[in-house]
Figure 1 (cartoon, rainbow, N blue to C red):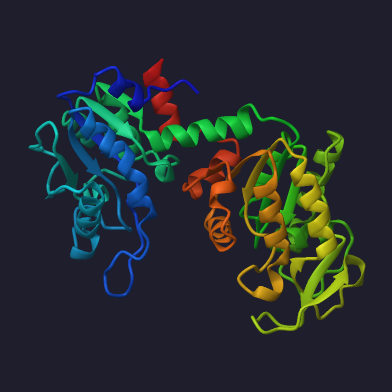
Figure 2 (figure 1 turned 180 degrees about the vertical axis):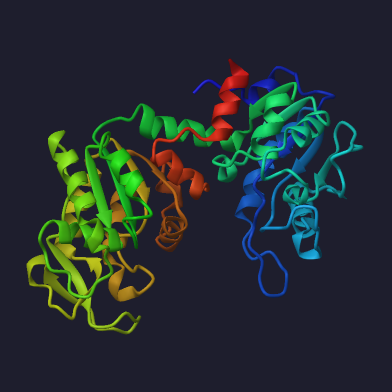
Length: 396
């Protein structure tokens, strides 16, 4: 993917004395007392900001936070707590600037935070007039917010059309490189794990991957629907019977390419959905009508682990079962450690996936952990994200 990289501009001295506008993803969660409860996204934004400061640029940083109403700012919409945390991480003051669209005063070597960009009228609809105003604020526009790359908004797309230079920050560049390595030019065999509660939310992803991957591993409620498609009884487990036809089509598409969707041969069942429910391992052919399937069984997990360890590239989105309950975590745990122990390049994304990675302490053994959420899923669908599209256009 041909893009201009901010790191290259800085290395060439092109950022010195220039006004740099960085669109970061600082949409962090807060606790009931209004304190930041998890600051991963703020910490992830630091390299781009520090890179700009070290290059002698005048730095402006903005992000969305929550779902504010355009043109109606409320105190809870403010990036003030984020600016405070960023100041602590950078070891310098980060003044917060409100009503910034008409102009910003910032000197080379300084950084300011521009208040919640989604409060600006026209941001979400990618207003051309707003985009031109924002582009006039800077000499270099830097998109470093992969989490919003699937949205064509003022600060993610419009400004990139009109800024003198539009480029990708280090975080976005790393995402692009990882996605390219995993999907555009993968080392084979290419294995994809797609799991979650519903086939319907990931049907287009399954269909897109079935045209490219060598193994398509399904888990969670999605696996239950595929078990139904394979003619197995799943009791009262979560599934989508009306999508059996689509599941069969994915299985056949894989089979036509000499690939497969491994169907569980054993499962872990319970009679109720609770953390203290009694877990029973059963063959997939012996599930009772009142059973709930809450995990893949140990034989299935071991078989998948063997396949994953032999993979060249692994794409991972979703846990294999209800890993939050200890009695039903084995499938996810075995698969997670198999990915970690594999020599394959691995890319993982999605909230539950990140939680599983953290639970099993394998962060350092995953090739790339995407923070993108919805953007990551759209990439798996084979879509070209608006933010990528405009950056490629500006690099041409």
